[in-house]
Length: 242
Image 1 (cartoon, rainbow, N blue to C red):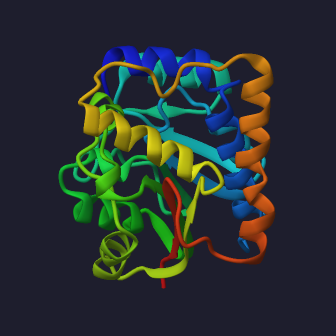
Image 2: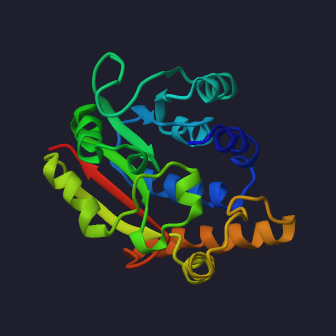
């Protein structure tokens, strides 16, 4: 990502509605996995470490992050060991397989996404879980994706094929960030049609609006407890190593 994106994430990850509600959803999904307690957990591409505290609730956590400044910040704030490394072929030796590997909005940054998924799967114990998120729908591509150095957005079938090719069993594949999908999609399509540049998808809204958006997005926990969601801004896919 661009340097300014990494730096801005430090200030936003604790309070912005997208980060806070997503953590609520991911925590609820991980809690339903039959993990040992404590589990051995790795987050690949942890950025400035906004998800490390939620992962620590489930076990002993390590992390990998290629950006040196974010790596140092994440380790200092969380107390989690954070190593450097790159997918798919530049990962460090972390001393054996993991019960769970997390890659939240990571695979879309890697040129060789098939190699990245295979490398993530290879870090798992047999029966271990790979928990991933990526942005959905190529037609939603926007300046936001370009600034974040995304290589692509995904359709669900295309994303699932990466896991099939890696020999991983898809345990769950669903869209999320669905309640707010219509306005987000409308804004991005309008900007694209009008060739409007600039604007900021990640600016922190005023506190009342930020709270409302968090509640709307976070309410999807209950929906996802009951069923998969057929559309949304993002994809959540959980796979298991046979």
